[in-house]
Amino acid sequence: MNADKPPPDRTPDGRYVVIDGRRWRATDPAIPEDVAARLRSHLMTARRGVGAALRAQDSEAERAARDQVQAAKVALGERGTPWWDQSDAERRARWSQGLDALDRASDQEGTSKR
Image (cartoon, rainbow, N blue to C red):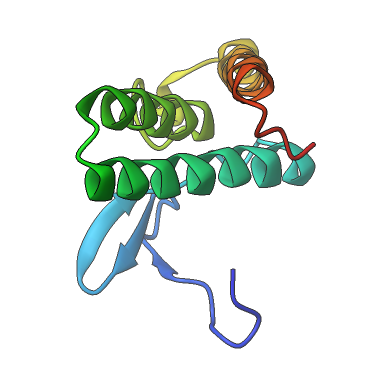
């Protein structure tokens, strides 16, 4: 996050951030910061991949990049089963398994930034 910009507002229950008047599911606050940073790195790499695939009109690469975006968002707790409905063990498994899968995929693509 930009150091000059304050964090987005949150709903009173902390489950959502509010950006430009729209609610978005917040990242699971139980994710350790180093893990969350790696997941965000994977997310941004995947988002750049979507843009590159769209510019290249490569539908196969676009699908693969969008799948990576989905995997990162689920691992962060921003999509899929809401993190507040999961046990601590389920939450740890979600982010650990998601990070492992994203790391493996980036290793195969040669884009690892660990």
